[in-house]
Length: 77
Image (cartoon, rainbow, N blue to C red; front, top):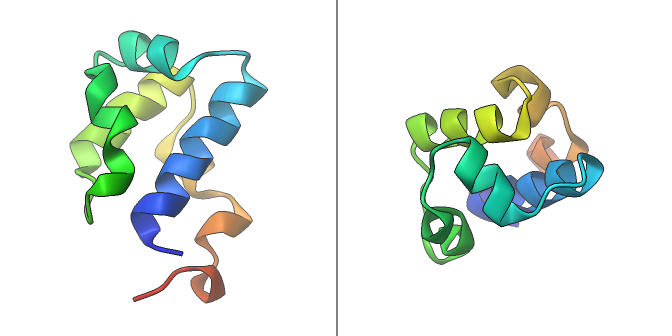
């Protein structure tokens, strides 16, 4: 899968784990909802955006990337 798809899946996974909607994650991280909702249409995700999303998820970047979704064998170059 593309890296951006793995990022979006991880956001959804952590949001569900914390009983938060994507809207709530966006609001808590001060990120426009549309930025997260349209993320998979892009080929890139800005680190500053991801950092803000992590704030909304109440996780660190390290915790965010600590997932098998980001194993090298799962990401297409």
